[in-house]
Length: 408
Image (cartoon, rainbow, N blue to C red; front, side, top):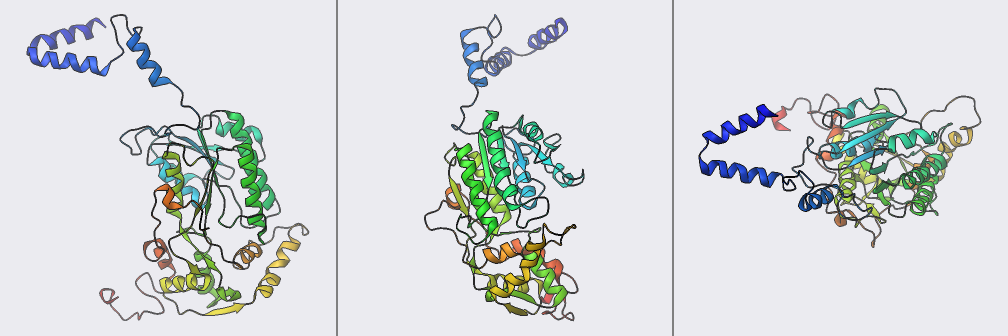
């Protein structure tokens, strides 16, 4: 301490009076609460209390003001359940790049979260082992958080996990634990567009039951209902492209006349982040997130064929026939002593969901209410399908391989 004071004395002695005055003013401005007695003065006490006052739950901005960027501190400590899934990687990336700490619960191997660690600064992406049926492990991954995002969901059942458990009971349990926690300021539940107790799809019925249970347990929760999500790892266009390449045709259930409103996955992740940035206006509300364009299933398949540069070939499968093809798996699921194959094209619940139009309601809150302009699908959002082109990204069955790249 004496050496530091002596160096400061020598520095001030050799500086001009005006420079010394400027440095003294800077020191006093950077330490507004310091008095000759340290931080015990009235101004110092007032300064410290305003800096350390805990945020009132549900009011004010959750994100601190700052320069932004992955090396800053946003004030968000988020536990993202389902972070290793399709939407999860994009949400983790957007949270991490603004300086948030993200806790990643996982129940698989150590490799399932490896791709997420590079998305944030050192120590900001924290993988934590847990089990969705172990309450203590769930409480452990929530212990240090002020935000919980639930992305857990299933579009098909397995022998171990039913729709009711995954889409309803797990969501309800997370909301109960978050409420008991006391420090969770925001709870975001990602559901599905079309979730309704009267839907023909069991998946959508259980999603609706999960929403109701969450709002009963945690009324301040925000519900996001994204439409069919499109992106590099999606489970619709990728499956269609693989099927078309392997078999030379694509089955269309009911002629593909149902209308849908597919949305780019990055826009959905941005909507979740924007709801965390507001002053609490999104709390307790339900948002329906659909893309800017309405497609029939057939038109979306045409976009897929156009992108992979294959000649479109379809087989119309009537709805009763499609249900008959998909039903044996559902009937045998818990009756045979071995796991059954994962459904791809003929998924009974997806068939039921696509048997009717699934569009954003006219009076629903949408992307616009969160300050986002969703992207159109044609172009960059579906460029990942170029990997299915015959002969390489510059070629394809509908483009002559004799043409030069500059002519395409």
